Length: 329
Image (cartoon, rainbow, N blue to C red; front, side, top):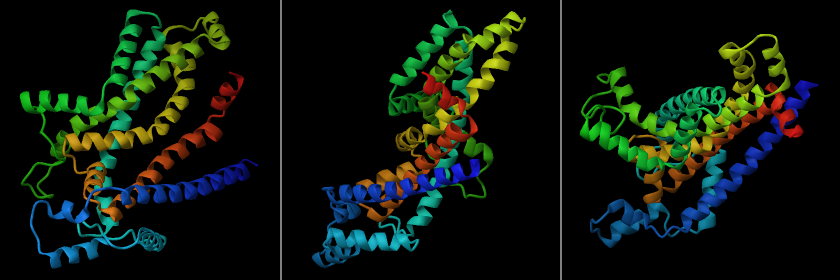
């Protein structure tokens, strides 16, 4: 019975994913077509070229091709597994996305883990010390984080720790002038620290506040009061009855934050000149690289959908108590 229910659940999700991708592709293509940016001018910059050369570039970019024809040509190639050739990188879109998304995935994964761990610990401490000075300090810290723009924090960290103190590199993911064989793990980690700290701020406050509220609710429940009456107290009580019950809901919330994580990566990568998918997105948008931009849109939609799917699976099957709690409230 559970397998049948799970199969129906996945089937519905796949249908929703197909509809989502179709809508996203159409909307993204229409928005790109409405852009006032001239792809030829964006590509050549301030250089002056002959009319014949411009005509060749316009044909290469498909400037004069009707919009509906360009869309159906692109959609037909996508169904065959071909995302096209990037107009600015002059290589297959799949290769560009694979290279850039790998770099971004390392950044997003480290930030996701850091924000989840730090946020969960802060939430547990605040919930245990509800109403105390520590609780108020953590809540104030979380409110400040929520109100802090990501790009502003990235600039501050860059100025303080890279420009003034010189503790970390100014940007990029590896040192300049070194081959891939010469780059060490320490070099990569050193370039990753500041972008990771900046991006992780997005999730710390949300997880911390959610964990705090859930823990306070659990600690005031009847079965915890009964456990206290039996002599359980302190951190052992919180670990046995609190942490175990609040962990899965917090993880669910973490997976639901994939969209914010991806959006924040775009800003962080721009500030730190980190060669990831976010920087490629900005370049594709500013220079009207339609194949690359639409390919990134597809990958980002799949990425966010995957996070939501995992959260829904936890919500529906792994920890049904979440659903029961929401129904009773």
